[in-house]
Amino acid sequence: MSSPSRCGAAHWGCTVGDPSLISPWGTCQVIPLSDTNPPLELLFSLTQESWPNWTYYIHSSPEIRALWQRPNPATREMIGEITGRTFDTEVSTYCEGQPTQYFMRLLTLKLWLDQRSAAVRASTGRPEQ
Image (cartoon, rainbow, N blue to C red; front, top):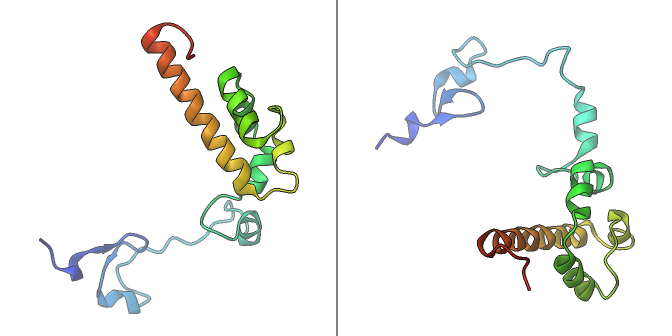
């Protein structure tokens, strides 16, 4: 087992306790931002967190829209029972007056149920009852 001082710092490429960390002329590789990288203001405006800006993605992603609109009558019926209203293929319907996490939980449930239905179909050759 290596000592902690031999563990690499992945973001700098140096070992922990490496004296070159304090020397600007050391052996660490620091790659400067080039002119082709987006401005930091743009990056920070997209999200202030480590996670994606889900509010933005939910409303603008064709992939999320396609996943939500993928037909599965059993899943649509269950989501309708949970939400107390008929399933709507428009993502924005589930975001009005609700936190983003509400839609994300419904989408997660839908994806799980879709996957489960596909597995049942594959193993039995017929739709889930």
